[in-house]
Amino acid sequence: MEPNLPPQASSTETRVPFLANFVATGFYSGYFPVASGTAGSLVGLGLYMIPGMERLEVVSLAIIVGFFAGVFTSARVAAVVGDQRSASAAFSKDLLQHGHAHAPDPSIVVIDEIVGMWISLAFLPKTYGVLIAAFVLFRIFDIVKLPPARQLERIPNGWGIMLDDVAAGVYANIAVRVIGVVLPGLIYG
Image (tube, rainbow, N blue to C red; front, top):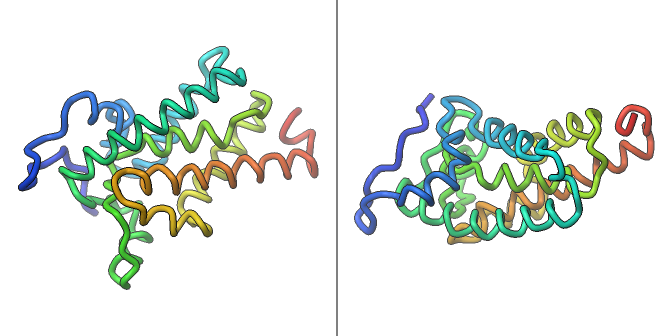
């Protein structure tokens, strides 16, 4: 298992600017040695727990600002570190080895998980059932990458890094809503 390493120099850029690295790595949670995507998702969940974050205007603004900040900062990090991936990204690495190339998505970049987590929780009540279901379902959809998430991750320049997690967040949000209809006491109780 390769550890998540700090950004290294490339021929075009020598290092990632501090603020871009800080944002893209989710306040450095992306450097967590295992399951950095899960660590980033937990940061997203933790930020969502701030009182008032669930309000329509607040979560909407956070998603929009986080998304565009993520596109920019993740592209900057990916340009320097390339496609360094942790063992938790072995599934995607296996796809790369079998000819399914995509834009670099270093495992230290977790702003996409933070925003995806917010999308999975958006416009839902802030209950323990919703929080747990959204977290678990988001992680599953982020790993499995159902279409079009797999295709979206191939878009270059930070867009693909962010868009596949947007898709996973939408899938998780819809799944939580479906579970809420079938088992309302479990999700909303």
